[in-house]
Amino acid sequence: MNSIHRIVLTCMMLFAFAAAAEDCAPLPNLPARTPIVEITIAKSPPAPVLSIQSPDARDVLGGFEGGTVVKTGDRYHAFMTEMMRGWDTGSAFIKTRLADWVSSDGMHWRRVGTVFSSTGDNTGADPRAALWAPMPVYNSAEQRWNLFYVAYRSKPNVPPAWYLNYDGELVRAVSQVKGREGIDGPYRDAGIVMRTGPGSDKWEGLQGDDSVSPYPAEGRWFTFYGSSDTGKALHSWQVGLASAPELSGPWKRCSSLNPVPLGHFVENPIVTKIGDTYVAIYDDLNPEQGQSMGYTASLDGVHWTAGKDLPLFPRAVAQPRTPLALLPNADGTFDLFVTALSTVTPANGGKAATAEVLYLLKVRVSISRSGKH
Image (cartoon, rainbow, N blue to C red; front, side, top):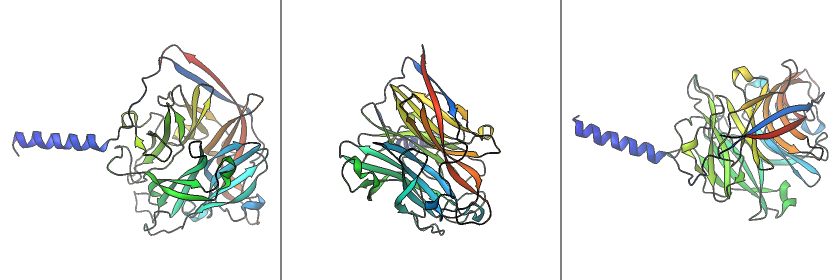
C-alpha cells in the first residue's frame, strides 16, 4: 500500500469513527462555580421494609433490585425488578417481573401488580428474556406517565463472555390512563429509544445499554445510561449522558462528555433536583467501595462533579446494590431507598437464602458551592 492509499484509508477510518459518535449539542458551558454536596445518614433502619418475607412477595425468590420510588400525593410508588429465581440457581438475573408496589409511609408495602414480565428465554433469541430497572417519569406535555426500562437477551455464558444479560435495549412505555392518577397503568410499549449500534460510544460493549432514568434540564431531557464490555474477562461498568427534546426522543448520546468519570463500576444513576442543584445517586460497586453507594452533583444537569461514597451498612448486615430514590421530607431530611443483598428466610418457609431486600434510610443533604469548577 502506497502512502497516498494509507492517507486515504486513515481519513476514511477517522471519518467513520467521527460519524459513529453522536452529538446531543448544543451543550451549556461549564458553570463557573461547582456544587459541594455531602450526604450523611441520620437514621438507619433495624430491618428492611420489604423482602421475600413479605406476604405479597411469596414467589419473588431472588428479591428486588433496579427501579425507583416516586411519591405522588400521599402515596409512595415503588417500581422495581422482581427476580423470580433464587440466587443459588445462577439464573436470578433472567426470569424477572417489573412490579408496582404502593405504601402510605414508605415502611409498609402492598403489591399493586405486574407491569411487564420477561420470558426467561435462555437461547439468545428473545430480546425480552430479562426485563430490568422500571423508571416512571411524568410527561406534563402529554399528561401521561412514561415508563422506561431495559430489555435484554440471555443465553448461557461462554467464558470469558457474560451472556446472562446482553444486548440491552432501552424501552419506553406509556400509561393508558391520562393524568397523574394513571401511574399504576396499564402501560403499553411505545418503542425502543436507545440501543447499541453505529452511534454507540467506544466504551459501550456486549451488555448493551443497561440503565435509563430521564430528568429535565436546560429546557430538554437528559438521562444517564450505562454499558459494559462483558465480552472480555476484564471489563468495567461505566455511564454516559444522552439527551432528547422530548421524552419520546429522538435520544442522542452526548459523546463529547462520555463516559462520565465516576469510576469503573457504576450503574443506575438516578437524578433528583434539590433547589437549583442536581444530585445523582448510583450503584458504586468499585472493589474498594463495596459497602457504599455513590453520589455526584451538578448545577446544570450536564457537567457532574467527581463522585463521592456514602457507606450504608456494615458488611455483616447487608451488601448495598441499587439506590432507588432520594425523596425530600417536611423536616428537611430525605428518604433514601436502596436495595441490598442479605440473608433472608422466605415467607413460604424453607431455609434462609441470599436475596435482595429494600431498605429505607433517613439522610441529610448539605449543599454549598466553591468559587471555581
